[in-house]
Length: 145
Ligand SMILES: [Zn+2]
Image (tube, rainbow, N blue to C red; front, side):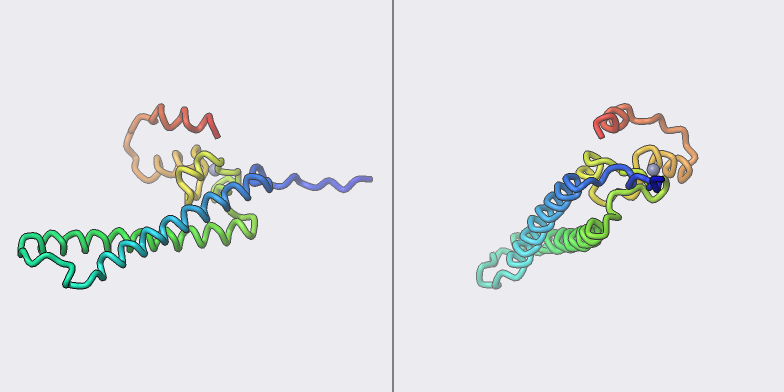
């Protein structure tokens, strides 16, 4: 008598996991590099700076933008770390509502998506009770997953 085992939840086979892992790690490296460059530029010595007040103001503004960007990127890196942890446990990429695999294409576009497209659509509809028409482009993209 064979013991019936439920098939592993959809998606996330080894190949997909490896692909997502490589994708996330590449993103992580790129982000960290970008953060480092931003920080180095921000920390540039005053000697390298313009003495023109207007140019200084522009530089300050750019610095602030760099810092804000670096800050956001750092947070994305933290999210990637969480995603990589989830991958290690085989929990990554599963819809929190229905448990189905979210889909590689969707995960690559939105690495931290927590729901599959249908569930996300439903959740968003529940969030705002307006009658926004479904985006046909988004639906077409869902067919690719
Ligand atoms: Zn779902």
